Amino acid sequence: MKEFLWHYIINVFTAVDQLCNALLFGDPDETISSRLGKFQDRVAPYGWLCWLLDFIDPGHCKDAVEDDEGGDQLTPYSA
Image (cartoon, rainbow, N blue to C red; front, side):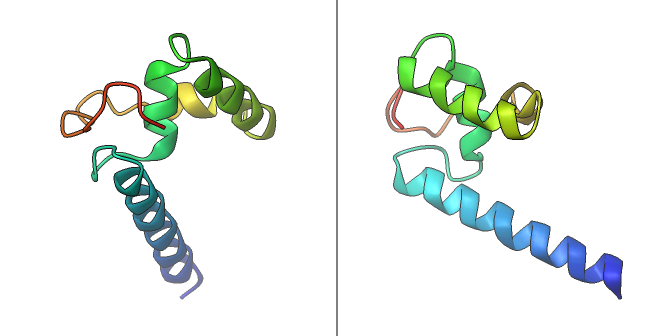
């Protein structure tokens, strides 16, 4: 039961993360962390946000990058 509940919580947080990314003109199947990781070297605020996330969870943005997602993003560097 404990493992089921943990998976449920992770699934809900991932869905909310993807919804927020879609609301910010991103690919609806990509998380915000993946998007930040892809552009952290090209867009200044993304680098700062990745630094903050990496401080909390080392390597977070790099590990979150989904190379097969992001094609439906509406703007190239939207936040």
